[in-house]
Length: 297
Image 1: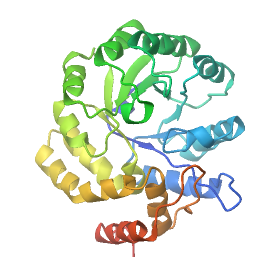
Image 2: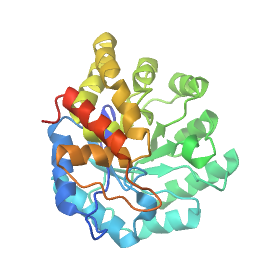
Image 3: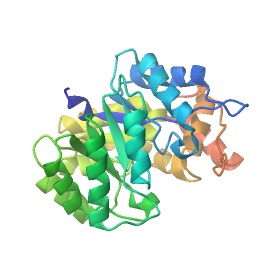
């Protein structure tokens, strides 16, 4: 399986709900078509932005099947499988139908705060549970536990199916070490939409983006320019969307992204507790910014 699709823009997709708190698959199909038509390289479902922690197993399985169906082979699909109970993650990987997936995204365990040895052992078990390519996910702001770059590099060296990391630290020293020392064929993917331009300059291969859900053309164009070493041109786009990036995260993810999609007519703002929709003031600002970016009438 070629992994070249990781050199580019993946989107961490929202999971749209209806007024009955069910997954709205018509809305999901509209969003899948929207991001693919606007240059996105691959889709990532049931991740943080997809509200994975509030989805039941049956919902996750159906969402995988529907996303693969809606993508129709146009782009690869990656699904999130992570958690702080290693046994449960392994069991899910062994019992879910993963047909049609091109990889899995697996977040470092949250809340437990394992040591580096514990993180390594967790991902060793995950790697041994599946033959699919694995994208590690380090997001200390959510897990309260950083996966050190040495742990990442050891996992990359020891397991053939650990092929990438979505790195969402703001530690520039760690980012630089990863870029400098990563093995050939191991992909570095940004998990920080606001930091992506600088990471691409350091040699990152792409991004799994939240904001790319909503403005996929802007984001995919920017990333492609970076891959062509046209950083001045990419920087102009980055500056133009920089304020919008922070708007989408100002009152939580994916509440901001769903509000933007409501403005665009793709889905409603329904979100599962304990998350709640954004307030009217921020909603108006997001709408105005979408209009400025020529994405809203």
